[in-house]
Image 1 (cartoon, rainbow, N blue to C red):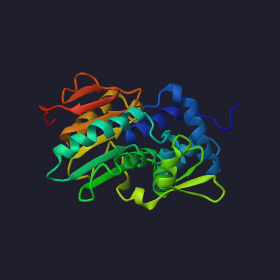
Image 2: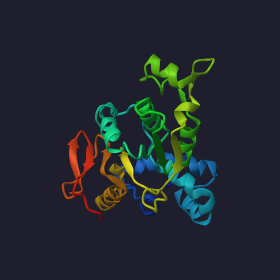
Image 3: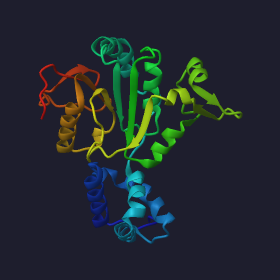
Image 4: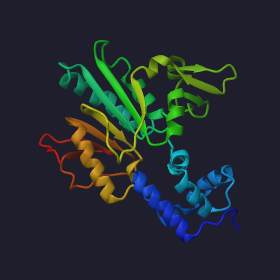
Length: 276
């Protein structure tokens, strides 16, 4: 017998709230995950069951809703996850940008769904020394979850988190704690990164366009209508030859003619892309 009662009605209400807030679809197969994550909130609030929690959530949205969404959203990442993307950036994207942006000397990259920061820091390491000092290179890192953003901004990781990095990278970009259990990102790696909280389904405050957007292992949680709308918005904010990278289990339908498929979940905005 479970610790807290969670009826079908409770689960449907939770799924509806999450979908309305951030577009994530919670099917029946996610029920156990939802239970385990929200049970922690119920204990913390000293409530009796999921119905009581939903009543509390409804009457204390300002205090509880962010924690509710943070509990549901999934954050699994690692440094240089899906290494082929970073190899493409180094071998193909950087040379293309050096040529295409030689007049503006401006590069903008967006890590959409940056989680605990491994992705934007991997980007910063990849771009290091790729552009001379007179270039303006910036990485925007956003996530819906305020907790993981706080961790990303601190840039402190366990030895297990940085296990995939080599000794040269660790020595160059991290400060090792005296006990050897933690590694802190050096300030100079953070200089090009701005961390911001952002709901992808709401208005985007960014001005200007991006050369590359990484939205990896995010749209897998959205339904087709939400994904299609998001891909259109990405096309609108990318440069004419801009790139969009998705996660390994994600794809874009052929109906999105504003993008051409480069393989390995990499897409480029086509020359004849139109605003939608």
